[in-house]
Image: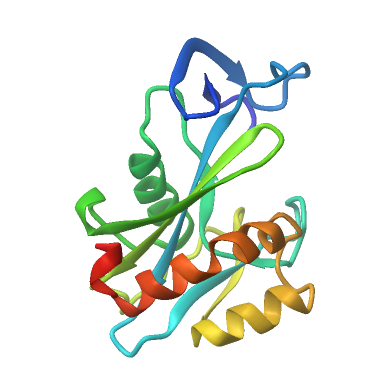
Length: 175
């Protein structure tokens, strides 16, 4: 959403006491903003992927629900908010397992996994999401490698894949 304010952070994700308005030029060099994402795992092991709305960058490409943390918001709070805004699914911060962080040019992508949510009804925000599917995790890998995911997700998933697989499976080491 245009006009939203982001905390500007250092490479560790620590806010530096300044904000940046989304869409404004001249994001500070060597600084970052936090982007949070949630991979929802249904009881049958399928994961939720969403298709970006036609009006967004990487239109009609797939991804996990994600978005920028707003000023004053933690990464975990942003993941909970974005998941609810885009899909209608509700999670508590405690329901999220941290998978890992991927550093981009000016963003820090934090990926979480959410188990045990009430996934009975998806309510997609048409301004954000064109469609959603429940798929096996292996299909995610096939799709992102085939170019069906938004371009930033390729490097993110290449890096975070082993930790994501462990978190989706519920391996104790990730909890």
